[in-house]
Length: 383
Image 1 (cartoon, rainbow, N blue to C red):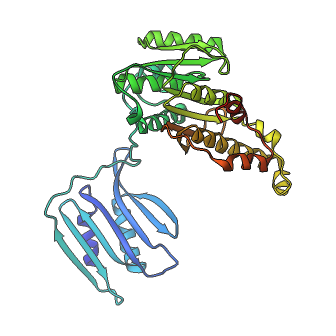
Image 2: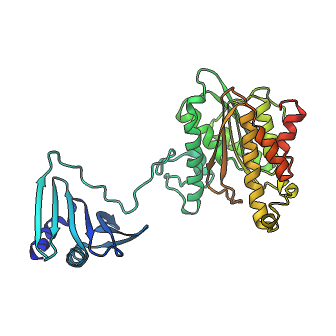
Image 3: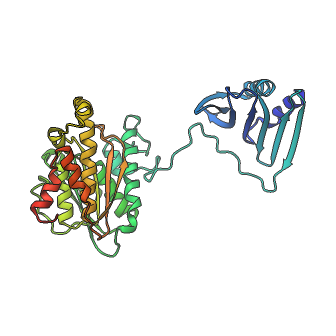
C-alpha cells in the first residue's frame, strides 16, 4: 500500500474535487464512501459521507487522519478508489491478492476549484446578506442583512411562500394594476414579502390590501408600509365574511384563517373571480364535529385520529369545490406557522373550465358532513 500512500499524500489537498471508494468487499457493510474538501473555521478539512443501506453517515477529518483512514478502508473494505482532481482523474484498483493498480488520465479541461463550504448555502429568493427593510423591522434580519438565528424558520417560511408565488408569475398580467387581498394578514410578514417581491423585485403594478381584526397590529403594519414608501400597500380592520371594499380581486391570499374563516375567504375569492388563490387553512373544527360513519367508526372513535382525518378531508373537499368552479388546484406542503403545525397550502389558478365532480356530494354524504364552502356555493346558486 506504499504506492497508494504516496498518491494520497499528493492528492489530499485543496485541489481535490472529490474521491469515492466503492466496490465493497462486505455486502452488508458500508457500500460507498464519498469525500470532499470543506472549509471549517478557516481550516481545510475533508468531509466523508459513508453510505450503508439507506443511511448516510458524515464525519470530518484533517489531512493526516483522512490519509490514514483511506489507506485502512482500501486495505480492508473496498476494491476501487476514484480521485477527481482539478486537472486529472485517477483510478485505483485493488486486486483480491492486494495488488494496487493506479491509472491516471489528464483532463482536457481544467475543472474549477471546489467550493469549500461545510454547509452549502441554499439559494433563497430573498437572499441572506442582502438587507431588506421590512425583514429588519420585523426582527428577521440584522441591519447588515444577517438572518437572526432565532428567526431563521420565519426566513425560510417567507422564501417558501415566495417560491409558490414565483410558480404562478406567468398567470399574473403586466400592464395593468392588479389587486391582491390578504385575509387575516396578522403581523403581515408574508404580505410585506409579497409586495416587495412582486412590485420592488419584479415591477408589477399592484395594490395590496391586508385585512385583520386586530387594530393594534393593523396600525403597526400601516406605519411600516408608510415608512418604506409602499404607497399601494394598505391594511384595514375588518372581518373576512363581511368585507365589501372591492369589486374585483386578482389574487386572494388567506393564511392561517381559522376554521370556517377559510371557507368565507375562498367564497369571496370565487365571487371576485380571482385569478389566483393561495390558502393555508388551520383549525378545521367544522367537519370534526359533523363526521359520522358506521363503517369508519373503529377509526373515528380515536379523537386525535378523527381530528386529523377531518382536517385533511376538509381541505380536500375545499380543493374539489375550487376545481368545480374552474380552477386548477394543487395541495402543496408548506412550512409550519409559528402558532400551528398546519403545513398544507392550497394553490388554485383560474382556468375558466368549470366541471362537476359528482363524487364530491357522494363523499360528503358517506362521511355525514356538509362543509360550509359547499353550502355557500349552493345558497348562491353556483352549484
